[in-house]
Image (tube, rainbow, N blue to C red; front, side, top):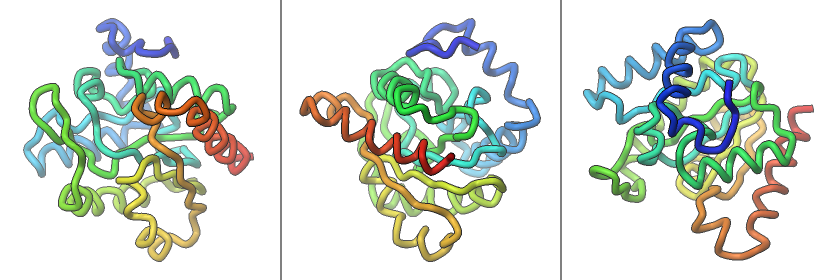
Length: 203
């Protein structure tokens, strides 16, 4: 597997990931995505889980906002997607020593919101529609110990999640978008510190 920034911008690498969608650790999640696609009749607006991550064996779930155009293009929720947020996420997780094979990523709004290549911010209606799917996902991740809500939109579900799943350690982290990372020199360190806490929680 090529684990480099933006590698899923290459059709050869995307094809390799698609061939892995039914490996034992990720097959249940692939079926889950196919079911939501069918229910909502939205096709590839919902990207698949990345087989390069831990799948149903993951102990840590990262919950982000919604798939961007890069995720729709690649077909995966992946830190190897061809966009700057994914690049930041890949590099920061590696720098913080978060073991990728013990994590899995999802979005509080599982489908692309926007039109064409222009995404819009997820709103409260989007989050409410996506919430039941997060609950279903949590049931599939049996070894799960840590949930990290990445960005303000995902963090809106924190109060409910604490009540429904008090067994999970709930953590928060800023979104790794260029808008946040590049706004102030210290913002990258804020993200890195949060991910180092995640790495420590997985020890």
